[in-house]
Image (cartoon, rainbow, N blue to C red):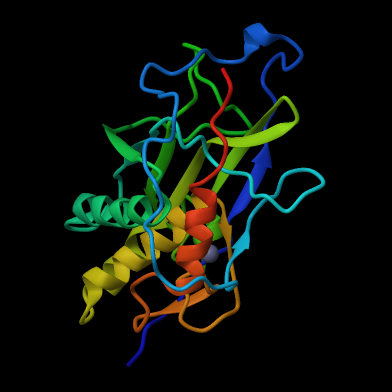
Length: 243
Ligand SMILES: [Zn+2]
């Protein structure tokens, strides 16, 4: 029997720095930022228009993206994590990196609650890491019903251009445990993570066959479709943040 997994849409939030009119409120260049993109999207493949962006630049069609010149840091709240969940997350991150060229790095585990509201920087004036939270429907009511996860990023503006700088991914541990226990369960759980991570880096749902970014997934689709890949290449090819 096919497992139908309903995956909630991604969302983006336009965040405001504490004092966005002042340059001093803008974080300095991260220590690990480079002067050129750290990676490049996978070459080849069939271009497809079966993708959509979560957010676009004001007055244009270019996507809002993360800075390709710096790694995207993630921390994991593993409260309801499934067996092998960290390894599956690393595999899903590798799939996103390979398709987009973006570098996504897990810094470790956290016990901190994901930040509320639109905070994008921490006390040390660096961008907050992305929080990947293994939750459940009681703690995260948006996971009720068939929703296996949701994700989104917050953006800031500089010189008239927007960038995502941090975000959240929330996964339904008990539901992913049920998927994991089915035949092909590891690929199923990994594909839910790939879907949510693609939201994180800027892809929206698309109603097209064969794409992981369809709003509801099924176990037969566990790899990127041509539209997913084209979209991920686009969100991996944004501008670098001018610090
Ligand atoms: Zn979704």
